[in-house]
Length: 257
Image (cartoon, rainbow, N blue to C red; front, side):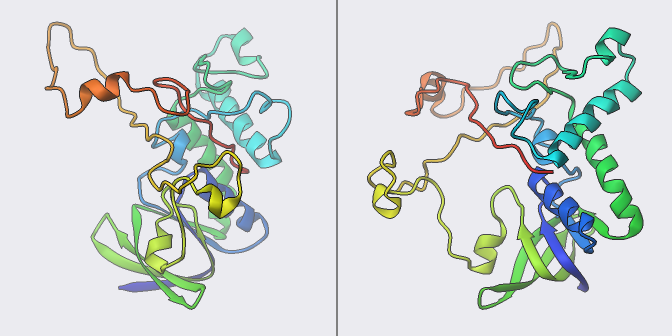
């Protein structure tokens, strides 16, 4: 098992993790950023989901760093794609012409933009990115997390990173149970928070639905229909209590890259 030390360790390379790593690197700190998958970017890349944002994202209520990410994605299309001149000239270019976001784009384009933003810090040595590293253990003294051990998926080795500051930017809060940190999930009860619209009793399973994205290919004349999975009829017609209706995604907040 090898061990590395760094002032800042960011575990999880989604948009929040990238934002944290960029901020620390811009402040002159040395940062190690880890990610379990092959790509940084989370929602915009490996999860294949466009940014689902509020209506004012292009005019206000967005950080300068996040605006820069959006500009970089658009500029990538202008540089690398054979766009019509009138399309490339649009200040608010929406490559995918989707309605869920004014910036629907391919996952690979977001990855290219993120890598461009990180490049100066990686070149200077302030930022080290470790892909295919999954956290498996945490060393802590009291409330202070001192190191995280990762399973390196490329060769099954284990790597320990010690740091002065450890940021859990994983999608599911992976470090919380590993470090024994007190935490709750789901909806809290009104008796806990005093919120007037909270349920009377806490419900750990009351969480936003999980979406699975996958590519499809049409093959004329072929039938690949599978057997109906369990409770298919129930979930085909089920409308959640929130009243959003079927197949309606929830809102996600914009990161501060």
